[in-house]
Image 1: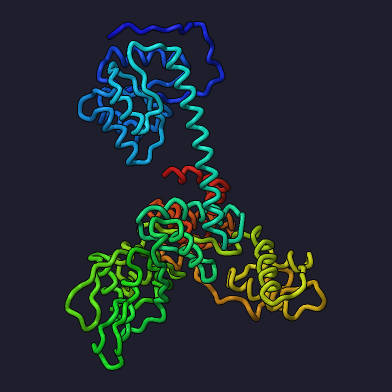
Image 2: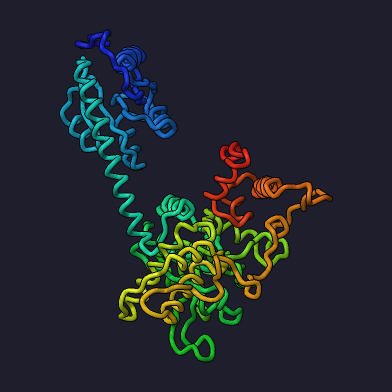
Length: 487
């Protein structure tokens, strides 16, 4: 190796500097050792790669903060490493260190995104300055990306009102999956905003310029399913006066939202499964098939476990739809959002009806925050609108006779719901004396049984229990089950 000039003083203190990972990719062992020595003395954590393939793998697995990259390496050269990083949108700063003084190579490296092009013999002071500048720029880019992400989140979820941990967790998961091509199954009680989330995922996806086609599966009859979903040709049956494009074809290059998918008939399910697998449809009355490119987002308030066991819903279709499950919390699990929603719906109502400003009394707000809202957001919106119409003066004192001190009147209690244990076919508790079993013990055991039934998937565990994932996390901590988070 050629002589390395440096003005590095061994006594320089780097105390307090957070250890950053620096990947040194060079096929020359001596170069790796020398650079590793100086990088370590600068206060960084040095990692090594002796060829381009190992460099790419280490970048993927360990996410270094800076890469010192040689150009001439076996398997993959430095240019190929940078091309790979660019294709993966990996913004890790790359500093080229090479013996080549070739100007075209330097220009090519900079065009591929290299932060700096340094040649051997290397001045270590210069390297230290370049690395420090690269880290500063990377940190600034990270902040910019975070701000962009926050702005994008506000824009995409502008119609979803709330700041609770439960709704924030759901929005975070939606942000994570929206730019992928995965099919999303949104699980949640009626009135929790499943279609709003579906629209947000579509707007934030690579298909945002394509159509968003919403389909109410519960309203599709078996006799009209082929025509409605796949289309028909003119004259193919009585009343078919024109060609008709079905929902799946309408969703080409976009997203099809299958709402209430749990209510789709078994005979229709088989046809939908075939379309998902082959990405082709055939209109009624036509012989040729048409290719169509779509993403599926589906939603249901039902539990599929019993439906699959009873052969009411195809298991193979379920797994096609549930590539990424997204559980939405019921309103009772996000009480801190209820005052925000009350004011939002009240302002929306007064604006739409050209009314003067209406306020909610503290009593009404308190009752609304403690009421369980079995109909979720839809029920809350209806209550606000009714109260605005029947109010006396410019203040709403009560949201209605059914909401008293934050509880349901016995006559209007929601229908009995099976416990998660019974609903999901889990074994009941083996305790002959219920009085000897505390409520907390019941709850802890229910979580463990649900976790086992969900095969360790926390999102599914929360769905089985009928709670939000954030609530599940709090309960895991409460009952000393936090180790399940990493299970």
